[in-house]
Image 1: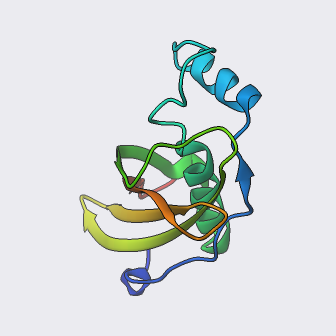
Image 2: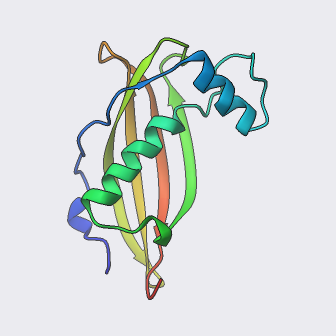
Length: 132
Protein backbone atom coordinates (compact mmCIF):
# COMPACT_ATOMS: atom_id res chain seq x y z
CA UNK A 1 0.00 0.00 0.00
CA UNK A 2 1.43 3.44 -0.91
CA UNK A 3 2.35 5.89 1.83
CA UNK A 4 -0.22 8.67 2.17
CA UNK A 5 1.28 12.05 1.22
CA UNK A 6 -1.06 13.64 3.78
CA UNK A 7 1.49 12.52 6.40
CA UNK A 8 3.76 15.41 5.41
CA UNK A 9 3.95 17.83 8.33
CA UNK A 10 2.63 15.32 10.85
CA UNK A 11 4.59 15.00 14.08
CA UNK A 12 4.33 11.79 16.06
CA UNK A 13 4.39 11.60 19.88
CA UNK A 14 7.81 11.74 21.57
CA UNK A 15 9.55 8.48 22.38
CA UNK A 16 9.96 7.19 25.90
CA UNK A 17 13.07 8.75 27.47
CA UNK A 18 16.36 6.94 26.84
CA UNK A 19 19.03 7.38 29.51
CA UNK A 20 22.55 7.74 28.17
CA UNK A 21 24.67 5.54 30.44
CA UNK A 22 28.35 4.70 30.35
CA UNK A 23 27.42 1.06 29.68
CA UNK A 24 25.08 1.91 26.78
CA UNK A 25 27.69 4.23 25.25
CA UNK A 26 30.41 1.56 25.59
CA UNK A 27 28.17 -1.09 23.99
CA UNK A 28 27.22 1.25 21.15
CA UNK A 29 30.81 2.38 20.55
CA UNK A 30 32.05 -1.21 20.47
CA UNK A 31 29.30 -2.20 18.02
CA UNK A 32 30.37 0.51 15.55
CA UNK A 33 34.10 -0.17 15.90
CA UNK A 34 34.87 2.65 18.32
CA UNK A 35 36.53 2.79 21.71
CA UNK A 36 34.39 1.67 24.64
CA UNK A 37 36.16 4.19 26.90
CA UNK A 38 35.89 7.18 24.56
CA UNK A 39 33.36 10.01 24.31
CA UNK A 40 29.78 9.44 23.20
CA UNK A 41 29.96 8.60 19.46
CA UNK A 42 28.37 11.22 17.21
CA UNK A 43 25.93 8.64 15.83
CA UNK A 44 24.69 7.57 19.29
CA UNK A 45 21.40 9.51 18.91
CA UNK A 46 20.32 6.84 16.41
CA UNK A 47 19.35 4.82 19.49
CA UNK A 48 16.47 7.16 20.30
CA UNK A 49 15.85 8.09 16.66
CA UNK A 50 15.32 4.43 15.75
CA UNK A 51 12.77 4.17 18.56
CA UNK A 52 10.92 7.14 17.01
CA UNK A 53 11.05 5.43 13.61
CA UNK A 54 9.64 2.20 15.04
CA UNK A 55 6.81 4.14 16.72
CA UNK A 56 6.04 5.88 13.40
CA UNK A 57 6.02 2.60 11.46
CA UNK A 58 3.74 0.96 14.04
CA UNK A 59 1.33 3.91 14.05
CA UNK A 60 1.10 3.84 10.25
CA UNK A 61 1.11 0.02 10.03
CA UNK A 62 4.20 -0.02 7.80
CA UNK A 63 6.35 -3.16 7.92
CA UNK A 64 9.98 -2.50 8.82
CA UNK A 65 10.97 -5.29 6.40
CA UNK A 66 9.75 -3.08 3.52
CA UNK A 67 11.97 -0.14 4.51
CA UNK A 68 15.43 0.55 3.12
CA UNK A 69 17.40 3.23 4.93
CA UNK A 70 18.59 5.70 2.30
CA UNK A 71 20.29 8.50 4.25
CA UNK A 72 20.89 9.68 7.81
CA UNK A 73 22.31 12.99 9.04
CA UNK A 74 22.73 14.60 12.44
CA UNK A 75 22.90 18.31 13.25
CA UNK A 76 24.00 19.06 16.81
CA UNK A 77 23.14 21.86 19.21
CA UNK A 78 25.54 20.29 21.70
CA UNK A 79 27.30 16.94 22.21
CA UNK A 80 25.45 14.06 23.83
CA UNK A 81 26.94 13.22 27.24
CA UNK A 82 26.56 10.41 29.75
CA UNK A 83 23.69 11.35 32.05
CA UNK A 84 21.50 12.81 29.31
CA UNK A 85 17.93 11.58 29.12
CA UNK A 86 16.90 11.84 25.48
CA UNK A 87 13.59 11.73 23.66
CA UNK A 88 12.90 12.07 19.95
CA UNK A 89 9.90 13.52 18.15
CA UNK A 90 9.67 12.38 14.53
CA UNK A 91 8.02 14.57 11.88
CA UNK A 92 7.37 13.45 8.32
CA UNK A 93 8.82 16.18 6.10
CA UNK A 94 8.24 14.67 2.68
CA UNK A 95 6.64 11.81 0.75
CA UNK A 96 7.06 11.15 -2.96
CA UNK A 97 6.76 8.13 -5.23
CA UNK A 98 9.46 6.97 -7.64
CA UNK A 99 9.24 3.78 -9.67
CA UNK A 100 6.56 2.25 -7.46
CA UNK A 101 8.48 2.99 -4.26
CA UNK A 102 7.73 5.68 -1.71
CA UNK A 103 10.50 7.99 -0.53
CA UNK A 104 9.80 9.23 3.00
CA UNK A 105 11.77 12.12 4.48
CA UNK A 106 11.76 12.49 8.26
CA UNK A 107 13.20 14.86 10.82
CA UNK A 108 13.55 13.86 14.47
CA UNK A 109 14.14 16.51 17.09
CA UNK A 110 16.15 15.02 19.94
CA UNK A 111 15.73 16.78 23.27
CA UNK A 112 17.09 16.34 26.78
CA UNK A 113 15.11 16.11 30.03
CA UNK A 114 14.79 19.92 30.19
CA UNK A 115 13.28 20.02 26.70
CA UNK A 116 16.38 21.63 25.17
CA UNK A 117 17.26 20.48 21.66
CA UNK A 118 20.43 18.37 21.63
CA UNK A 119 20.36 17.34 17.97
CA UNK A 120 18.16 17.00 14.93
CA UNK A 121 18.35 13.82 12.88
CA UNK A 122 17.10 13.70 9.32
CA UNK A 123 16.55 10.49 7.40
CA UNK A 124 15.45 9.35 3.99
CA UNK A 125 13.60 6.04 3.91
CA UNK A 126 12.57 4.00 0.89
CA UNK A 127 9.34 2.07 1.31
CA UNK A 128 9.54 -0.73 -1.23
CA UNK A 129 6.42 -1.09 -3.34
CA UNK A 130 4.96 -4.34 -4.58
CA UNK A 131 4.96 -7.67 -2.77
CA UNK A 132 7.37 -8.01 0.12
